[in-house]
Length: 448
Image 1 (cartoon, helix red, strand yellow):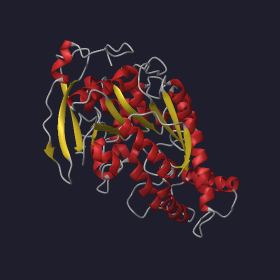
Image 2 (cartoon, one colour):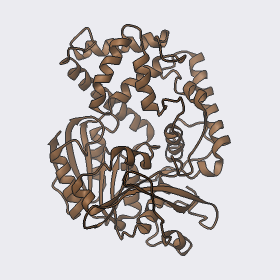
Image 3 (spheres, one colour):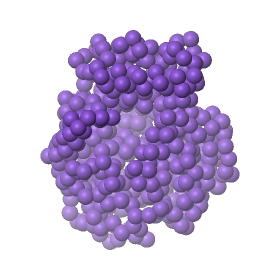
Image 4 (spheres, helix red, strand yellow):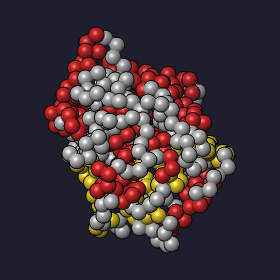
């Protein structure tokens, strides 16, 4: 992020003209999707030096085209290319009619100069570190693994790349993308971390926004400690909601039917796995506290995971953690063949650049935090969406972001799970109408 001053240029400087003016060549990549590569500077302060390629994917509009809508699915670290393929387009038929649906792998992710740090065995071990170290030995072990992880990232990815995978650089890439797609203004739908990327873009380029939806909002003004505290509370609220839903099911594994009592049972399960790993009939890995917590937290993201978690906990209370391990693997990006995608490694690399106050004491490059609250003065209306029992991006963050933005609009989703679009007819209709017309919707709440 060298050379970042907190605001973006009013127009593309001459040295960036060749990037803004490049012609994208799109090729078929299956199931109606088209893929391309876009060139951007590795370091925007030195655009004549090294370049990297950003992987793009699009689903062409089905009717009269307004422009392109760019999607980011979150993370940081999630592959937009794979996520768009897997989601079959994400947006509604009404939006698809008028927009090419476009997504991308941000720098450091997937097909865009991906960060690499460790192989399967190393990541298996790193992701199994005790999340609640309570002895000097466990604390030293955690610090030793943090140091090893950072050292391996440096060796496998290089200092140059690691210094330039932050969100400010990704926002600059997105403005190049807007221009190469032929759009005077960006139409954008960002989920979770995608709201952080979108809000920084809007603050840097407020007059280049056409319409922007930030769903499952983060608050860029928070430091990592404050965000983590809010997120911990969000997962607590989501877990309590899961338990209340569980009590309605015949296969609910908790002996008690009170939220407090069930939370006590969960805590005892965590302690049990910390003392001695649960049984695993799948492979040689240990199902310890880190795995159990990862499985439970991952299952809070979508209510569709709750039946699987009930089954996994039923087995776990009997000493078998195999199903919990499967859930944790999905959440950690571990494939069925034992390899990992690069989501977690990219997440660490991006966070350590964006949030130098984060727990990255051994990180080999210095981060630079975005220096202020986002305002996006001069932008059109920007829609912020918050879900009341969202585990990962608590509702209070959406309220805060909507207030920060000079032209923020808050839409409330009274529901469980992470992010809202696609799960509420009332909310989807409001968002679709806004994306198509670019006209400000009324603030308000919807139930899923």
